[in-house]
Length: 48
Figure 1 (cartoon, rainbow, N blue to C red):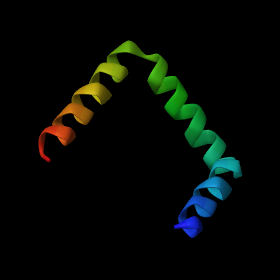
Figure 2 (figure 1 turned 180 degrees about the horizontal axis):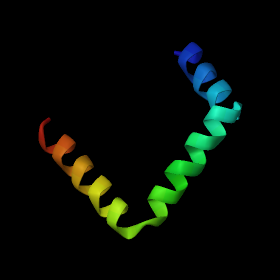
Figure 3 (figure 1 turned 90 degrees about the horizontal axis):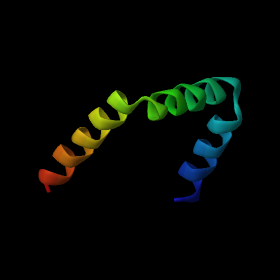
Figure 4 (figure 1 turned 135 degrees about the horizontal axis):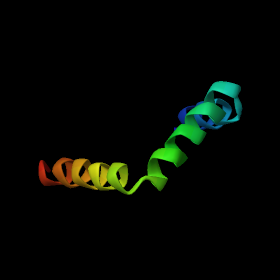
């Protein structure tokens, strides 16, 4: 699906994409948010 990847790449280079990336990086640096994300991923994997 190269169309989807191209759209993601385009979004990541846009100003809104840059803001989103910065926000995600800040959240990833926060230990509490990292633990919340790990729990969410664990729950999603458990459903399979």
